[in-house]
Length: 345
Image: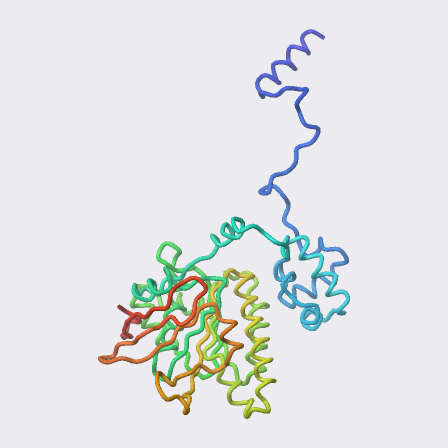
């Protein structure tokens, strides 16, 4: 008995534990906590989980940010079931409540910045193009909107250490302006393998506004197993402008556009990705002074955009980018040029 007592005391001394203070059970840390899966939600069985995954919902956050009607349509569920699933996902994902400003600042540290490799543009945007943001680039034809889209698509595949995201890009082309040959030129300009870059850029041609909106759902389904870090829509308003003509169709057009923008912003939030949309412009004939050029989309697009960049041509092949709107940066302008190898200072 004495020998056993000595052994026990020796073990406790080596472990630096006091038997009186020892807890009955050890609570797992956040790192040790098991990952919560869709099947863990109340009322979600294997069949429902399979439906959700087929519709592109792989994690709790993707479910928590949905509306019941949208989830019911996309996953072919009843609206009551969808409401219950969303409510449970919000609780388990711990979203929807108030947080302190300090906690929000800590969450903002997850935001990444994509370098344009043009110092003047990066300085204008406070270090680059942010994730979890919707960036609108608008300007007249030939101002370089598509060129920025191509360049950022290439840069997104760069390693994190070189200002990229090391991620995949989804490119929705509404005007048949995507050119793999241009991607090849820009990739070589950065010393990258063009074939490897093109392999990470997934392109779809949208033939009308309904198809354009469906492609966003397709991105959700195709993104399984991919590191989706950028979604580009070039251009956002082309089909909406052509299909919804006249003031009588304006309200319907803006509602559809608003829904489309909401879906894009959800992709940005769920994937910690950057959404870049290019936009067409029109001239106000009643403008007596100043620049008559105005972006299409009205207040709906203006409110949905996190950052707005206005591009215009200058002399000697230069381009001017003006930051029109930002939640935390002052307005300003920068000058850059478009070369065969891409955007340069």
